[in-house]
Image (cartoon, rainbow, N blue to C red; front, side):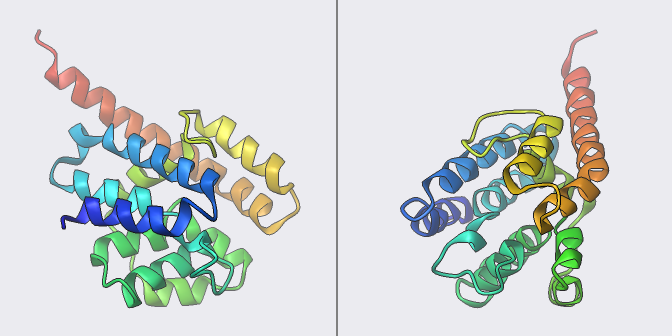
Length: 189
């Protein structure tokens, strides 16, 4: 079974029944990742696999610390033997280090999981932060606002996402610039 097929199957088994909205979001994020194939090249399948798996740490079957990037990455590494690059992307998706800091888990996250290439970190952040909880496309501004509204500005998630917002918007801009440049390069003069 190839990496992407395995990733979809695993994510569905962990999210579809207990967390159908989270599963819809994950499918939407994977779709956004697929739309980046032109700029991801040989890493496109890896990115799609990481995108569909990025929120598996929310699954009641595997949640341990309550911090889904860490729980998901540990499960994928320890129980599933998933590709190391996918595991690292899941561990660090969408500015996870900042949330880990809020939760007192930054040292654990950093010591267990190295960062992946910045372009791939940006691509997953773009895919996640331009997808609604229901799996529909949105802007990073609307997504950050939705997260703050859903969790509350003074919660761990609310505080973290407000701190992360400048980097989220910058990463989205970097990906959009790469997409525009790739599109322009493909246009006949």
